[in-house]
Image 1 (cartoon, rainbow, N blue to C red):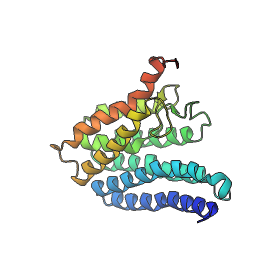
Image 2: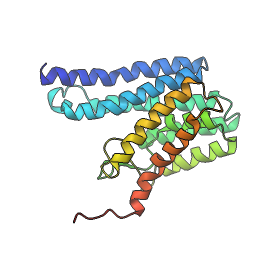
Image 3: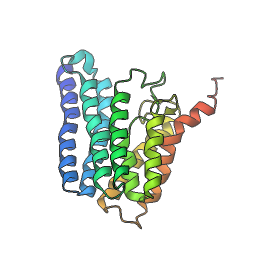
Image 4: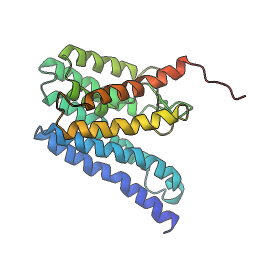
Length: 232
């Protein structure tokens, strides 16, 4: 198989995220939240693989007529932002005006964040919360905190998008990668199980989501506080 064909296949693999987004949206319209999140978890898995594959097969050189980064951003906005925001609005987690405020804040803030050229730091982490609303909303469905807590998190995370607070990239941030990558994989698998059991309140997955989410949220900030050891 030639390098060009391999690069094309990577682009086509990325494009499957659009189909997964549609399947998730159809489930969301019918308020089948477990199925919606299962499709979003599969989309997250695809998103985690296509980047390393794109770099391995050098898609920019071998198939430059397709803009893989633009394709990825379009799909990410659907699966990371738009569909999770819809779910938060249509569910009973944020009723009334709180739901309206949340979807406006999430969709507006995230689209501005997505076009910010300063989104990535020098070590390929994210500058500000990377609009991973799919992960946030899934955890909210699992834990079901109060309306005020959810809304406070939505506003705080949106504000955080426009700060210099660092959030690790699951595959590209080299520092602590030996921990970050397993934590990211664990979060994905635990999230899939939580959705599979329809967020059963007694599921062990809730603790797993809490532990992995806390690490992924604060690891980058911890790296900003803890100085990196210089090579001997």
